[in-house]
Figure 1: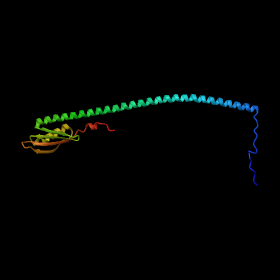
Figure 2 (figure 1 turned 90 degrees about the vertical axis):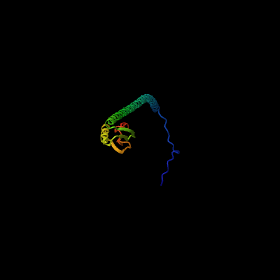
Figure 3 (figure 1 turned 180 degrees about the horizontal axis):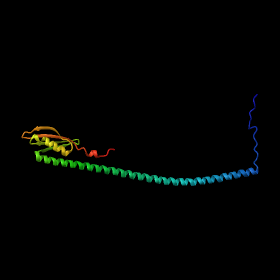
Figure 4 (figure 1 turned 30 degrees about the vertical axis):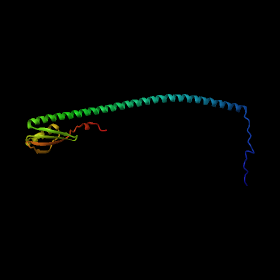
Length: 187
C-alpha cells in the first residue's frame, strides 16, 4: 500500500497575522539593522579614505625609493667608468714609460755597439725590431740590454750578413704584459 503524496496546493498552510508586539519587535529589528548597516557603511567609507591616503603615501615612497636607486646606480656606473679611465690612463702611462726606457736603452746601445734601429713593428701581441749592427759579437750585449730594460726576454729571430758590412737582425719580444686591455675590469 502506498501513501498518498501530500499536495500543498490543495492544503495550503494558513498564515496567522502577526501580533502587535511581534510587529513592533520586527520594526525595531529592521531599524536596528538599517542603523547598523549605515554605521558600517560610514566606517567602511572612512577606512577606504585612510587606505587611499596610505596607498598614495606608499606610492610616493616607492617612487622616491626608485629614483634614489636610479641615482645610486648612475653614481655607481659613473664611478666604475671613472675607475676604468684611471686604470687605462695608468696602463698607458706605464706603457709610455717602458717605451721611453726602451728608447733610452736603444740610444745607449747605439753609442756602445753602433746599433742602428731600422724598423719597429708591433701588433698588440709582439714587438719586432729590425736593426743593423757593425759586428755580430755585439748581439748578446744588445739582447741582454733590451731584455733588462723591457722586463721580458728579447729573442733573435733572424740574423744575416749585409753587403757592405755588418749584420742585419730581427729581434722579437712579447708585447707589454700590463697592456690597456688587461687593465679594463672584467664583468
